[in-house]
Image (cartoon, rainbow, N blue to C red; front, side, top):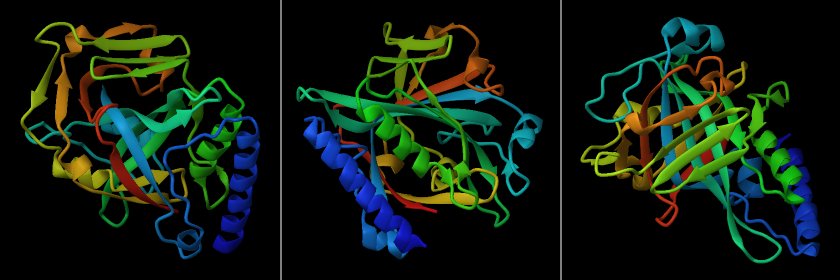
Length: 283
């Protein structure tokens, strides 16, 4: 089955790439290295490079999360940075996950915001569980192809359904000085505004947070990714933002019903810095 899927995917990618080339619009999507041989043998399929990133944390509770998660996953508290007090939270990680070239040779990005929470599975391993994702697609012919790729990667490979909802974002802006996310009728914006706007932490990510990111569940049937990463993520420089400077217009539940109150924001990496690279074994 893996061989059949890999061959079909290869022809599909080749065909669409040819179409994009004919329109002088070749997209370097997510810097993915699709390796047919590895796909056949169930090994690492691709690597994914994140350019910059923001963590937005929403306050929640055990009972709220328990209603959302399948029976084989148990909600857990999480500490993001060493020294943090563990809490029940939902996190939205937003980053540029692609570098694009348009038909005029201009550089662009593919911003994506993943909403997830933290869990323990039946094996006793901690991980994360996806709730939904928001993506700002380019206004071009490649938009529909990119949508299909995103949904393919986010598919539940047991029943071939969409494992978590994919939504269009109206705007996502990520920089060292600003974060802005606009979904439906709601917009959140935080900007650098004086010396008290943010603080670079002389700390590392909590080891539980790192371990949780290595196992990512999607859907209700137990499908998960196993992720491998190096020191670009584990030892990333973390900046904590002052949420007093956060501006919210609209209702946070536009992101998800569980999103009611933002209690923390961090950024790490950067658009002009080396990307944070993940190596993903995709079930």
